[in-house]
Length: 377
Ligand SMILES: Cc1ncc(COP(=O)(O)O)c(C=O)c1O
Image (cartoon, rainbow, N blue to C red; front, side, top):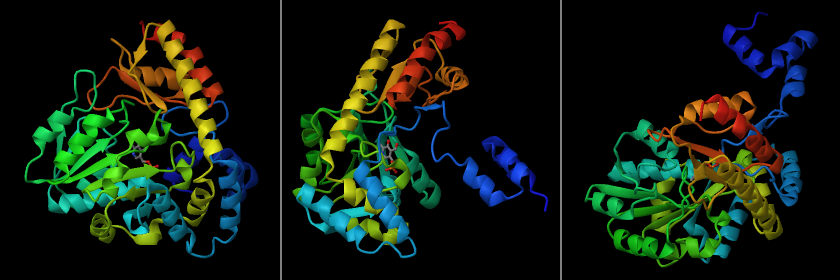
């Protein structure tokens, strides 16, 4: 049977076409060609993943859970909610699980947009808000960053009106990596939460120097209208396993829940892995050490080449390329099998690069002088 042009194009792009032609057995060809991650020799530094994960405990659990994949999720979801609740001294009713935090963030944004507008800084992790705007309509109000690209809390506060239903703060922020001082941040949350819901997306919290001090989860405990988002995709190294969650007052979780599909968005394998590694502090420590090692290497290399990054608290750097264009830089790196991000909005001379394996970082470091040369820097 002839295969469609689109399918042929996809197969060609992945190298599956050769195997398909050679064997004539598509299922076998797929099994041969799938990599489940970056191809050998490619340094994937564009998605803020932690390649050292999943932890060995998670790997054991996901194999066992996969063998029971015929059944819907079952009791591992309530178990994970209970574990998260216990760690943060809240009740399970304060916890909403979802397939990666992206899903829960989208549900939150959808619910908020029914009630009013979302206020967020110009640079933030925004695909979930964009998705909600596309699905449900509504308005996103953006506020300017400070001169050094930090989130300007005063500008956000000034933009909040009676029409605001959600303030969206990512801390540390993506793509900048910058961390807010917890003291003014807490004061900001206390002032705003009586007026609107305040979201703190803390996807990278565990990577910061003092995760507890940098989290606003205690405000949820106090009953303020504050939502904290967390994920297993970053420090836990489980981006492909899709587990994330919100911690919020039960009334807020109830208001969001009608926009979610409950347990139907959850994968049994990911949740089992999350349960198994949630308390694997040795793995978290190890991952953090590797991230810091990678950051130090990259910072030194940037310095040696006359470049600087913003002071990051996360597992990525936002590099100031000076006069260079970040998209041209991305393409030149990609030619050398180093994948990084291109331009964010109109910040054309800033380039985001994630920490990966040390050998991936070495590839970036080795490519840097040649790329700068090629671009005439
Ligand atoms: C700040 C932030 N929040 C949320 C996410 C979504 O992650 P996930 O859906 O994998 O939990 C990301 C992903 O990069 C992110 O950077």
